[in-house]
Length: 144
Image (cartoon, rainbow, N blue to C red; front, side):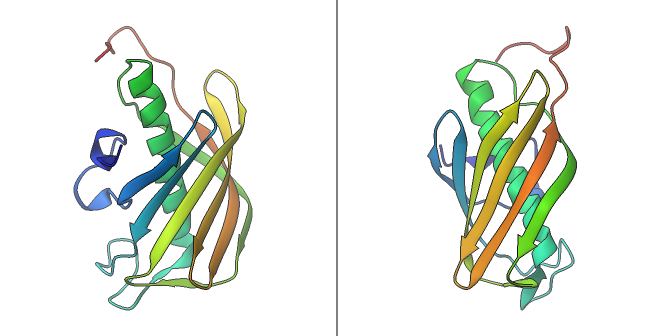
């Protein structure tokens, strides 16, 4: 599934991922080229490494989107609750750099999940754990 917009509840310039590389029941890998559009505090040369948290969150959203499609449920909003154990070997990502974002679900209950996340690229190694919340389906949401 490489149509990211069909997997995440984002549109337009807020879609930061380019494609899904791999997926299974517990993990997803995605890829992107770092953009220099200044949308998230970057410029024509670089983007701050903290934007990687959004890259990770969108990768988790793609994971949830594929799971929802497989269950014939609608794509739903999720909320980033927090980030733990953030570690980065860089303070910025070079515009035009290809990054691979890997997320692995390490805990899940009804609505709360924790993912081990990693961003890899040339001279880039960023890791973090993201805690996310997805509200339950309500009666007004219908299957696709």
